[in-house]
Image (cartoon, rainbow, N blue to C red; front, side):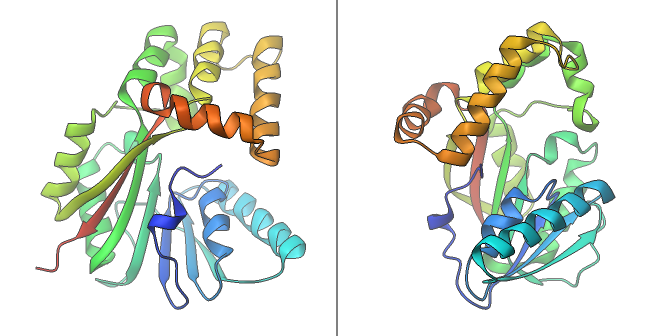
Amino acid sequence: MISFDVKKLHLEPGLRVLDIGCGSGRHTAAIARYEGVQVLGADISLEDIIETKKRLIFQERLEGKRGQWDLLAAGICRLPFKDNFFDLIVCSEILEHIPDHHQAVAEIVRVLKPGRDLVVSVPRFFPERICWILSREYQCANNGHIRIYKKKELVALLEEGGLKEWASHYAHSLHSPYWWLKCLLGPARKDAALVNLYHDLLTWDIMKRPWITRFLDYLLNPVLGKSLVLYLTKSNK
């Protein structure tokens, strides 16, 4: 399930998109569904790059080829691209892992074209703080979360880097109780029946997208949304 609202991004043929920190490729695959769009999934993990490739190939077999895609192993603090190279950049659930987030933002801004958009998502302060309280082990999972952003702090960081916020929302409210339960019972446990049942529910929701869970997610996002999603534009100056 993707974090951002695709309708806000105006994905048109010829756009060059970077999904930095693509992970297993959920956002890269979503963008690759758009005719004529060129999307590059980049991640520091070779294992994640391989998983993204499998996802993209499987998607093309099911739906046919629409957009163009490529994959690259790269870190966010040293991006191997020319200045003003991309029309759109997606950075989902990455900045909370990066020690030098100022350098990461500087690199994103450098390779983004003036007047073009960046979408950033990070764990929301309130749900994330509960996870940290419930489990120290959680902070070390997935290469470690080294900070929790408040919205004002993240907006300030990005706007100081040369961007301007124009929209925001919260996403994945149904995921918050799952992570609280997982932290309470042990993040690394594989035998927790309640956690496994909840995981099956979330997987079913992602695959089937029934109206009832979509409605509940929409209704609860302002209060329980697990992710904060920001939309910003690079200054033309």
